[in-house]
Image 1 (spheres, rainbow, N blue to C red):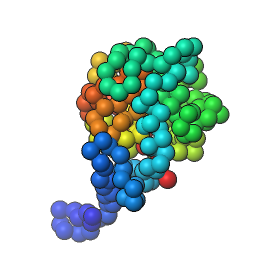
Image 2 (image 1 turned 90 degrees about the horizontal axis):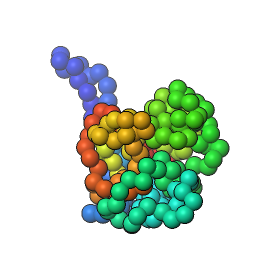
Image 3 (image 1 turned 60 degrees about the vertical axis):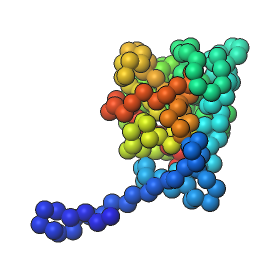
Length: 201
């Protein structure tokens, strides 16, 4: 798309990419995996692996036994959303402990906040896009949470939309209006106090 000023003079171009998904939010084979998000193209294989891991009951990084209460929608918060998302990131091969350490040390939030709080991930990821890309293969996407594609991470600021005033919330989009971490439920809205991150090629 070509952009013009009020006098009709060309002032720039903007590229828009669109991904058409199946009704369940999956990117169909052969679609190219393009997305209208960020500079990179959605890595549909990584996104699918992350969504698959986040959508099942599996132990979090901090849980000693069991997973969240059930697969699919419903359930309740166990207060370990970041633990479940971090576990899914590791199982899906998106990030290693060393990758987490790099983003945790990048600031401005401390490593302690990063390691125990969903807010810490958003704090450091938004402030360090190059570290997020090199360590997690992800970019922040300029899209509202309810439009997050399958396999995208949604991180909510502290107190945003009623989430924890200390830790915020973090979850993985299932691509159908539902997101999962320590519980699965409808994505609550599109405030500016949330960030969406997608795996990119």
